[in-house]
Image 1 (cartoon, rainbow, N blue to C red):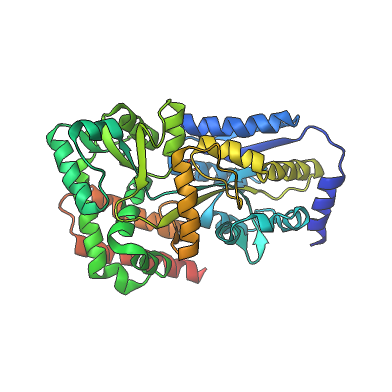
Image 2 (cartoon, rainbow, N blue to C red; image 1 turned 90 degrees about the vertical axis):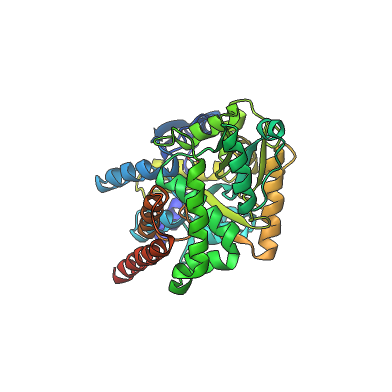
Length: 418
Ligand code: GAL
């Protein structure tokens, strides 16, 4: 505790000089890189230096592998994009700086929506600062393609299948997606929300209830999910999420189911979100909001200059000005209460309104695919089962439900034994 309060005093009392931080992240697509530029330039404006530690790969798997090797070599960066369970796991291992003294001193708590505060807290301590709230359960569709074909946007999965069949008949790829397990998991999660509903989703993923995981609703969800395999692009293997978005933009595909980082990609390519590319809640998930909270954590340091640099960065990230500028480019919404949304696009405004509504209605759901709902090894187990299932047309939904339950149970007991 003494050490922690020292770090705050150090932060506040050191003379102002250029701070240097190395920041690990996987924001490397066109839209994401533009968002990082916003951060870098605000940081540079304060006379500071930024050492970019960018690791390619949506979903962050490679970034996490690289981070582990740096941490094992006792040389972690000052800061890293760590979120959800991954954040808590690094926290439990004792690698992360407790930001509670700063939060208390600078009055951050009242600025955080309850979901944000809960997600970032571990045993009452604040382990990271938020950069933005992404909504995962979105359906993006190319308006021109829909208009040309005289099609209406689907509002449930049965309609989705009907629309997708029509598009396919016309030689248009219905669904832009690649075969990366995390992209497949995003699709599955939205089907689970749309076909199963929030109680099912909570029971399956948050309570990990065996009867729900192997029951008829799960079999129905898996059956629907498997149907969607027929609508993926010809070049589905190796297609990255942002390449899938490019396909959607060009009309090469009609729809994409993905979180709103898609929006960053759209604006980077001069497409207007909510106009050229429509944003709708994923089929059957109206009123629900599955979230992916992005956050930056600070690795423990002893050097007062590094501590100061971390503090400066955390402070910058918490300013409404930064949150507005960054999230307008990133596609997410600010993770602070009562943000000024006047300069945001239509989809962000919708996201914010839906977020508030979902908050009131108890409809906010942590995204499994994005590491918000289950521990990392369990998420990996789920993704393995889902991706082999999705890629095997003959796989059996009943057996897969059993496999899913087993995979979750074995990782759960593994975690309990530790
Ligand atoms: C998520 C991350 C988002 C987004 C996406 C694609 O895991 O939280 O910020 O960029 O990956 O890279």
